[in-house]
Image 1 (tube, rainbow, N blue to C red):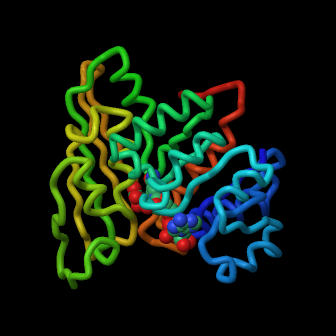
Image 2: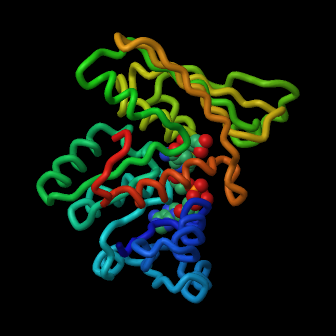
Length: 259
Ligand SMILES: NC(=O)C1=CN([C@@H]2O[C@H](COP(=O)(O)OP(=O)(O)OC[C@H]3O[C@@H](n4cnc5c(N)ncnc54)[C@H](O)[C@@H]3O)[C@@H](O)[C@H]2O)C=CC1
Ligand SMILES: O=C([O-])CC(=O)C(=O)O
């Protein structure tokens, strides 16, 4: 599967290292869409990829799937058009907080018969939420995110501080680089307005900790993810990058586990 990558930051670079430098025979990043060709020129020789600055040429470069690993803003701009041409894996899931965009993307995906893959990112347990919601009923879903203070605020905090309380839609609006998980959680569960979110800036930790609580007619579940950060971008959890690779690896397998 030839992969076209949008964004060569922390997750994009992880993908290049993991997929092009190791033995994933069926996967290869062949094209990378960047904004500044000079800045990323070394990727061509380092990873054997071709760089593009134009979306049209990027999409016609023989790729089978597009992996988005850029920003919520870029995802919102590019996704409605790209889904007409290719299957897409989107990690900036915060883009889907825009309901008009979701309607557009869904219509285009159906009309052009392309899939939109949404990895679980820096959390897990989305299979449970979907199962519990599809034929049963969820009563409540909450997310408490605790990140190193410097990831969330410029304030010099001496102790932990609750910097946000609200719903998932408000959380991604205020923290577009840090709360994509609130939107994928909302999508799998009770929606953006009913997913409760608390964000804590903690000067004492060096991991991204996400605590998800779910109640419904199935019973109760609680998941705590204590995620190591990616060295290239401490805001982003290592697990988020793994979820992109894992989703790609599983897409075309005939045996599906926990799906
Ligand atoms: N769903 C989830 O659980 C998680 C999602 N994320 C999101 O994943 C995305 C990638 O994360 P990182 O790699 O850590 O970010 P990063 O900031 O390290 O890298 C993003 C890269 O995208 C590039 N970029 C921005 N706009 C672009 C455009 N229009 N075209 C091409 N390239 C563009 C930037 O120059 C940068 O190199 C971010 O949106 C982040 O918020 C991050 C962590 C968890
Ligand atoms: O990586 C994480 O821990 C969560 C994150 O940044 C996001 O959801 O945007």
